[in-house]
Length: 474
Image (cartoon, rainbow, N blue to C red):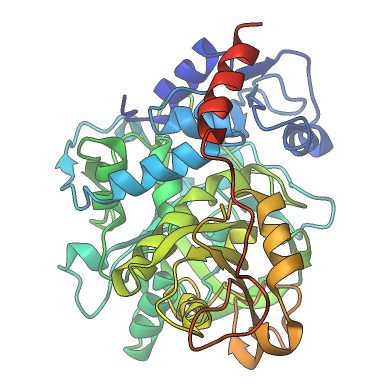
């Protein structure tokens, strides 16, 4: 089942027992963020949270932790809520193969019901804003799908980017924005500023459940997130035209904020508690001037708690990081079997692969670091054999402990790029990257003593299925 808006997905979550309504009155700070933080600590099937009784807000509807469990992630893809993580990743990969699925245009968008423009714009009046962590420098919009176009090729639909970025509200009609240099919107902004022009932008809040998944997905520059959303949904993504900028935005959004990056204007933004589990400091960042806000009647404000993993962010960007890396690597190295990039948006990646010849696995690791996502994120790669499941950490630890000779199997490459938010970077944006080859050597690499491995008995798989059935029937 494909969901066209956030509201229909929340209804399904409630039907499936995956939405918890908090009826008692709560404080905007710290209760809302603390509850979402707690949801990440109570297990892999935690519910989404709904708040509508918030002290100091007369008319607030706040949704948190919407993607914050494997059960909710499965439901977002239209799968049964008990679908195993590995199966979710496999299904994600199968749907990827249907890309591209062209969107459908439907201009009857419910966010056209209400408008703020000119002097009437006031983000503080419309949105129930609150800080996510004590050390945050202000209020953030951290689960928005942000739309921009390539200024040099504005009619190219594939180069229209939809991404997730951190956005600080610094005034009733002004936003400070962090475009990471590796991301497409940073390229759009650079092109516009080189021409001395402002860059139009649309920021959409409260989207259907697939939109945040594709907006955080590392895709090629000219691949359309909307066409990927269609593939993942199994039907075309419904779009509408943002009235002030002409940008294509999701029809089902709760709020559409339009404006433009003020060319060559910078203002201090931050600090902010990040997905890395650390605060990133204040930096001079581009500024967006808001010119129009369109919104549904009684809009739902969806936000996302970020902090020490695991949080909703990790569920949201886990499979959507694994699958692009898998597909990009298999296109050049068909020997690659699976990619686990669940950890901190792929700062660490575990890859299982067959080998053509000695040293092959290390080459796969180097290629992972030079994919579009790898340039900014993949700082550590662990390579394992094809019979090791990279999602099974005991198997990975066995491979590391038994097959790695540090002198020959650990490669350190200094002074490579990484996202500035990586806390280990020094200076910000530069890091040494590491490959650990935990595969079995093959010719002409004849190191070690791996000639007689112990394998599972032939009947083991049959007994796994039998035991699982007996356990389920108890």
